[in-house]
Image (cartoon, rainbow, N blue to C red; front, side, top):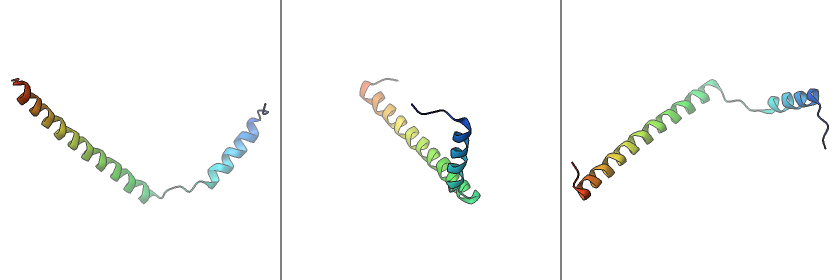
Amino acid sequence: MAKLDPAQFVREVRQEVSRVTWPSRKETLVTTGLVLGMSALAAVFFLVADQLIQLVMRLVFKIG
């Protein structure tokens, strides 16, 4: 079983974090915008698909 050494763990974590390539502010904003845009597009798509399915079901079962 490995020995638990909190100081060693913190050193290793700091070493790993220093190796991370962090995105620039511009990259973060562009990516965030793309995620929000694609989420909005998916929401509209599923809204339209849901409304079409609802319309077909009403016609098939003659409801309303």
